[in-house]
Length: 405
Image 1 (cartoon, rainbow, N blue to C red):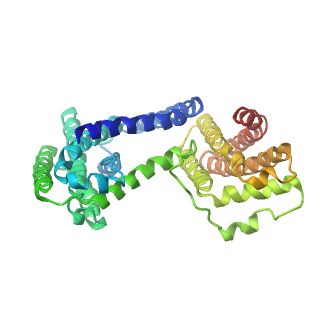
Image 2 (cartoon, rainbow, N blue to C red; image 1 turned 90 degrees about the vertical axis):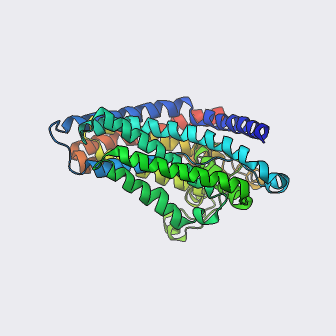
């Protein structure tokens, strides 16, 4: 079973690195650097506004809420497959060693992710909550132990179905962990750390006893692993085509009145098709909404005009770059090669659809900048973003699509 885990772990890592090459491309890395730089600058400016004499009254609640969200990073990765129900079922007595390796692997990456986010929160804990260095270290250990408890609960739930029910997850993973984190800012975190450690020891013993005498829930474990991998595939699908995802089209009848009608014009034919693909396909419509909402939220809290311009242009670029695969959406349909339609008509129609969708997002971003920074900044933002939309939908799109054709 240990050899099986090693083989699956190696294959899983190879697959993840394969998709990460598409995610961490030059354009996205550059955009990510600008985004992190802008957020870091805003974070630094906010910390400078805090007084060093007394803590902010609501800072413990905000800190506990942020740490509770941070604890959502990472889950138990078993790498089980549907066929395991048949081929590994007779070896249930040996599944314990396999799950032990899976737990260690998941715990390492979960602790790494949690520690990175906690490190980013440390300046806020120092300036807003006014914690001492020893208190910050104790709180960090407490967060790690709570993450350990969550993973132990997930592992134990593979033997006891009640522990996987929604009400228990809300009670233990959410309510209990949040109350422990909130209490650590008002009471001695050392006692809470000892309490969490004792609960962890109890869960570990219960898990070992279940591995010896309990019945492993193969179907639930496999379905849970499939849901976990599906979340990763949906993320990768934002950057490249993932064959493991099949998104069903939705009519969205309430948007029909805003879409162009069918026409005999060649250019209008492609326009008709692209608008419906953008609206009805869950990948593209979901991507458009998520990036737009994220950009609106970030721009609303930006207080520096030039930073708002840069971030707005960054989100417009990301949105345009991610919508480029829409151009090839109908290429696999045989009818597209039978219709008397030329490729230049197809490119022209796609450019029109891309420009209109990006321009709509640019107007919304400019309204957000106007509401937070004033009319002058909003007008400059609108001019810059519309100019970028013209460049993205025109020369940039033509060059990129020629390279990918």
